Image 1 (cartoon, rainbow, N blue to C red):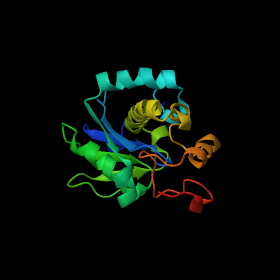
Image 2 (cartoon, rainbow, N blue to C red):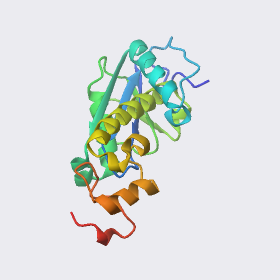
Image 3 (tube, helix red, strand yellow):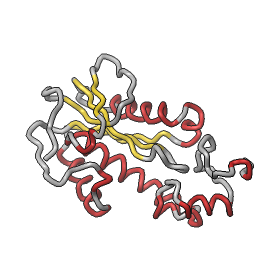
Amino acid sequence: MLKKSFSRLALECGTDEAGRGCLAGPVTAAAVMLPLTFRNKLINDSKKLNEINRTRLRSVIEQKALCFSVQHIYMEEIDEINILNASIQAMHKCIENLNPVPEFIIVDGNRFKDFPDVPHECIIKGDGKYLSIAAASILAKTYRDEFMMRIHEEYPMYNWKQNKGYPTQEHREAIKEYGVTKFHRKSFKLLPEQLELSF
């Protein structure tokens, strides 16, 4: 059973991102504030859940949360400010959109930048320890997957509906064969033989 709260404050939000290691598509973050009375035994790190359960839990989270926000940072900005900064910026944008304003922020991972006037704690593997971070990981993953399914229709040869932009062998082979799209992150090492790509 995941823990409800780190700070024991009523207005604590959890935040997480999805898609940091992808070659294509946005990095997507979510921030979620759950009531202290919230209980759900199924919620866990989104990577430990199958697609059906993630989708079901997303609607539970959205209905029961005090508030939540999901934000994408797109490829051009990732290339401009780097993936770590883009991930943190996406989380900050989510937190800015929460109402009520959180009293405390818990962040999955070990890197974050201070959010104005709200203390935070970074928690390694927090998505497997705290309910609000796990809930944020589910929202970030499902919203990002939806985005990748949509752009798959435009570029089916990369099979993004399956690999979601991650660097699978199939995805790299497609980049080698068909080149790079507007959805690829140009600052990432898209192929081992990077010199073969021309933008």
